[in-house]
Image (cartoon, rainbow, N blue to C red; front, top):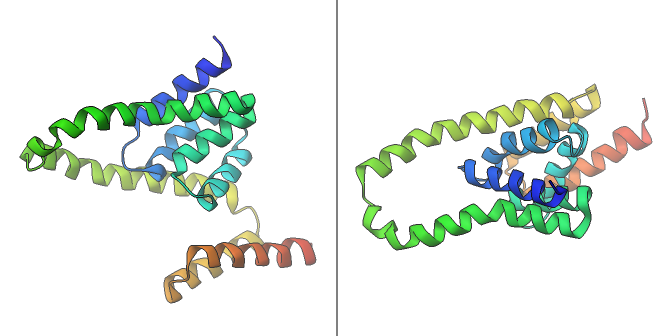
Length: 178
């Protein structure tokens, strides 16, 4: 099977079976692109997540585009991106007709209430996986605690925290290579 078809199908699965937004998709993205298909390394996966968060747009689409490009160039990025958005596009197109009818449905509300805790579990799972890969030394832990403290106490804008993280990285890893 062509790599483009494989990428489309893998990202179609990611788009079809991931509910709850981009962060909830990360475990499935990780499994498909790092573990099952070995298209990128885990370190590259962590880097792609970082880049996907810094660039405009949904994390799943950005991730699909980056991975597709890395593996198969422009056609790969098109195949992966189309794969990740196809199911949602079709579902929303169909659901749009029925959404008003089922908007107040007890069953729909109950199903969504049951899915919310699962989404938090998926996000925590990815947090732990990314943490194991990202916090490799005391410098990375220091940067993490500083940024966490800034976000918790001062409600810094995410762009400011990214810039501060970059400066801390330059200082701790570039100027003080201990």
